[in-house]
Length: 78
Image 1: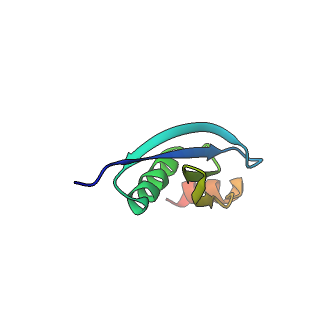
Image 2: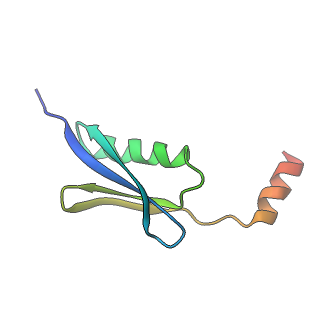
Image 3: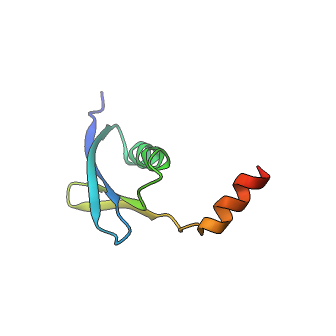
């Protein structure tokens, strides 16, 4: 039976610094990335994530900021 591994997921602020850290326990790297990306989708106030396994950065992802006028336009038409 395979053991679960621990990963650290850092949620990034607008400057690229870490504002929040959470521990993720999974059976593999791909599952950890998927969970971290799901957590980011549920936290629109964060700008990105870094996922680490020990001293190895496994995944880095940042959002491209969407200008406010586009959001307002989508809200009016949607």
